[in-house]
Image (cartoon, rainbow, N blue to C red; front, side):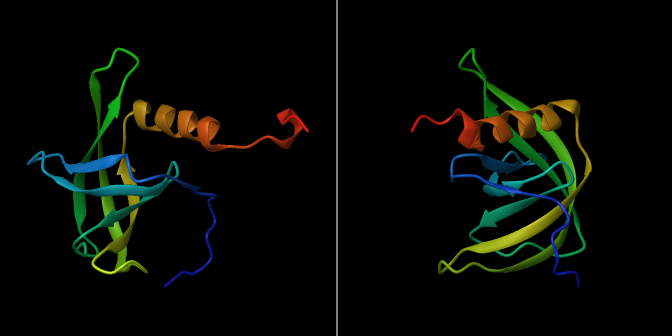
Length: 119
């Protein structure tokens, strides 16, 4: 089991919901994300070593929700520090270009550049 993170991840607030792509039922929220993986926060533990068909519904500039479908394998799942919540780590195996664009937008939105800050 690896413990060192090789890829920088960015924390997300609890508003980007994740759905089961096949049933369109919500399964949790994005906890953090990178090009190669994501962490899901859910009310139930996820099965490890299983491929999941996931869907992100992202609000667009036009006000409509846009689906980003991806396939990811659950690598680990354990109870969160918050009672009745679970954190699960996924390795993304198939994702469209929209997923990478989403990560870039989130990176810009949540990043802080101290050189651009006013004192």
